[in-house]
Amino acid sequence: MPGLDDLYREVILDHYRSPRNRGELETPPAVRAEGFNPLCGDEIIVFIDVDDAGTITDIAIGGQGCSISQAAASMMSAAVKGKTIAEARRYIGAFKGLMSIHEGEIGGDGSEAETGISTGASESGDVKLGDLEALKGVVKFPVRIKCATLSWNTLAEALAEAEAS
Amino acid sequence: MSGIPTNIKDDFPVLRQQVHGKPMIYLDSGNTSQKPQSVIDAMNSYYETINANVHRGSYDIAVKATDALEGARAKVARFINAPATNEVIFTKNATEAMNLLTRSWGAANLGPGDAVVISEMEHHANIVPWHMLAAEKGFELRWIPVTSDGHLDLTDLDTLLDGAKLLSVTAMSNVLGTLNDIPRLAEAAHAKGALIAVDGSQYVPHVPTDVQAMGADFLVFTGHKMLGPMGIGVLWAHAEILEVMPPFLGGGEMILNVTKEGFTTTDIPWKFEAGTPMVAEAVGLGAAIDYLSELGMDNVRQHEIELTAYALRTLTERYGDKIVIHGPSEPAERGGVLSFVYGDPEVRVHPHDIAQVLDQAGVCVRAGHHCAKPLMQTMNVPATSRASLYIYNDESDIDILADALEASSDIFAF
Image 1 (cartoon, helix red, strand yellow):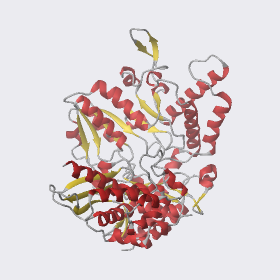
Image 2 (cartoon, chains in turn green, blue):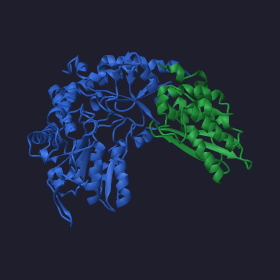
Image 3 (spheres, rainbow over the protein chains, first blue to last red):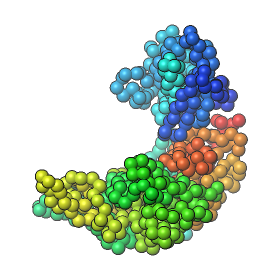
Image 4 (cartoon, one colour):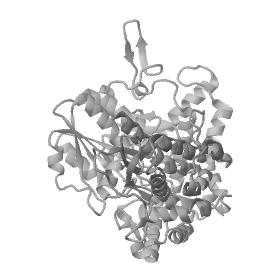
């Protein structure tokens, strides 16, 4: 039986208490994307500055929400800052893999999470998730997967917008 | 004492289970209530003995099924003291009942220059249908504000009602538990020539309901919050209003005649009940009404006042400024819906995290915006945790809730 220790790992609580890259960036030049979890009212705002070479030179996170959504956003911001758009997309894929979400797969909305089996490693490829691995326990609490992925989905939107502009 | 039997939990099979190795404590009845054995049995018995389509078969069980459906309608009518049984329309839920009201009465009566008045404490079901219709018809949507202590601010009510055709308001807030003074609101609306629609989703299951004493013109509520099954709700309105309302959904059951050129509608209430209705659910709702009536709705309400008082006292005495329970502080002015924020006053524990920690202790509460985002904005909170009480809850459930909250301070100690 999964316990709360699996969910609320110390590194997660640390990011929750001391969120990294918290704030706003001026738009433009930054692009801004907003994500909502209608279930619990969580809200994440992602600002990114992308230079001409396609590198995320700065990132800021706004909004509010539960410990998992806020910690995941903080960890995400630390992971992708300084990375290229392409690298950031690989992180998104790897993180969703960690959450047992496989794009394009029927029922890939976390339903497989109930088995408790994470196949994230196969999708990680060369991406080192580092601290983010601490969120692996979320898979045992399927309702919370949406909390953990909110910031990543919002980042994906911001990346698409940055590319378009 | 309230007159609710102390062994009442025995009537509810779902409450007999353990979750995460602990007895399940169900504190989410504002979301949906649990069902007594008698409701489950009544629905099973319907399918086992008289299942047939209604209003069209001439054989024995078809007649019995029709009688079962119409018998349930009569029970609903008596339960809310409706002047006539044919004023009770069955819908899928309260949301569909509200959409029937907006799409039928609203579309026929509202246009540019008109106004509908709602309040900041409404459930989305009494907001979004009006937004949708207003975008089509161009009428104005006006809002009664909510005070900081969780009451409707009626200071400018008469101004808000000027030129309004309808006041649509909840009888009990699903977030604050506030009981609104419907007779007073009805009088104010009628004085300005407006009708009043009442969202009774939280009220009807918990408080003796009399649509005539309320002065209501419409009442919507749902079966699953009052011990009945999911999939059945009710719109009640005065017959003379329903008679002139256009139909809502078209199809079988609601017609008198159909030709290649058009159709004519049948009588109320069937005019608003297109297609095969939810007969087993109606039977279940009827059984739920029997169960509540046997307990006595006065006892149901008294139990809720006493338990709400105990909960408010227990939680505030134990946690002081670490807990804020929204809504009126006087139990007699409210229902047993306890929305709260908890944690260090500077840094509250997020409701979603509280619900997670409580779940590990077997305690079921809801976390989130409770389908009332405009109210959350007014209260200036993104979300709350909500424990909502019903007849099968007792003081020990509150004690377990209070103990379980402690664990979240351990994890989220700042």
